[in-house]
Length: 114
Image (cartoon, rainbow, N blue to C red):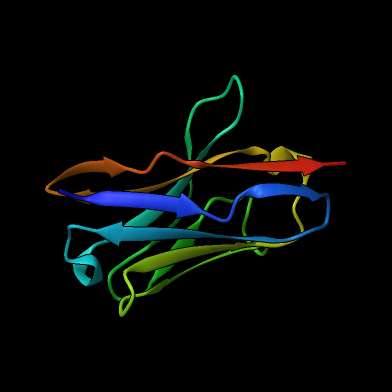
């Protein structure tokens, strides 16, 4: 059974940084594309960043140049380095992968104050 656990969220002032982690288990992590999504209050969940098994990355326009997605296949961990945070980045951030089925973590809250 696939399990995804996010960590690293918290409260930060605008302009600050946070690094999120997603620890995966129950899957062959190194062959899976991994994704970060976020959902702000009253808004739909949106794709923030993706990383393929080979390390290719894509980003939402809203976070390009500020967020960096990466992965460590030796430890089954994916990261999201978030810099120059703004209040618009406030959301619950979720880890996701499609491995036999759609798998989601429970999310980690990021709150950015102005």
